[in-house]
Length: 112
Image 1 (cartoon, rainbow, N blue to C red):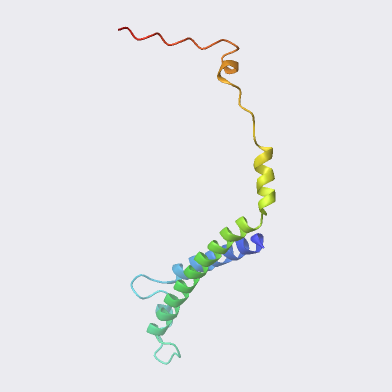
Image 2 (cartoon, one colour):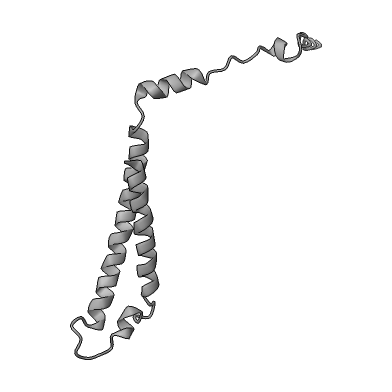
């Protein structure tokens, strides 16, 4: 499931990049190539379509990313997570053992 979502995220990302590159910041872009007066979709309709497609792809990318995050965490059961934590527990040596068996020096008593 997770791999399928990652592939969808990659496809949506590439298509979104292509749609953004087709657009022109001054309103030209793809619409500038179709300047014939008898065309079915006008210049304004083409830019509206590209803008709606950009928003739709951006929303799809966010939703797919959230689904991928949720599917990572729900893929493991609680018992598997608990056993993994139990397996990684390491007993730490005491302070005396860490110093090579030597006792830590006592702090001097405060003078009165």
